[in-house]
Structure formats: structure tokens, C-alpha cells
Image (cartoon, rainbow, N blue to C red):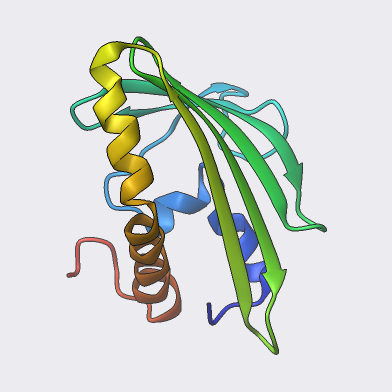
Length: 142
């Protein structure tokens, strides 16, 4: 992406995603002030799934590494690992890995579909970051 690793890394946090994910509105449980770091707990509402609780389990800005656990009760649990590395002058590359398991028979199809569509999902992230962060188009200004 057309951002340095230092500029890009904060985008992959609960607060950072507000800048490029339409409808992303984390509610902080611990601490109650917005922020990033190991032990931060927040919730989001996922369309058609309910409330997801997230725990940040790793936060290493200098290394460009962050990890999260996300649980949607009675549906699925996921571990998410993000790595942001330099990729030339004022450019960076993000790698995102999801490890997801269903917590009910009803979620099996969701997990399978998520895995099958993962590359498209990541392409959408790249497009959203380019549009809303690099190009400066406000969310909702489609």
C-alpha cells in the first residue's frame, strides 16, 4: 500500500479501522478509553451475527505485529494475526492471517464461505485503505 509501515500499522487496530471500515464502531470494555495494546477488550456488532468480543493479544508497533482473538458466542471464534512490513520507499505490505473455527453447526457454512472468499476479502481491505486513507475519500462518500 502507498503508506509507510509506520503509517499503516495503526490502521489495523480497533480505533484505526474506524477510518476505513464503513460501520466499524468498536465499544471499549477494557480500558474504556479507545486505544491499542495487549489486553485491550472491545466489542463490535456484526451484521446478522450479533456481538463480537475482541481481545488484542499482541501489539508490537516497532515490529509491525498485532494479534487478536474474536469470539461471536454460539457462532465462531477466530485468531487474527497482522504483520505490516516496509515494501519500498513510503510503501508497506500487510499480511493478515485468520484461523477460525465454528462454535455451532449453524456456523460451519459461514466458516467455510469465509475461507473460500478470503482472498476477495483481503482485496476489499486493500481497496478500502487505498480509497479512504491514501486517496482521502470520506467513509460514506462513495
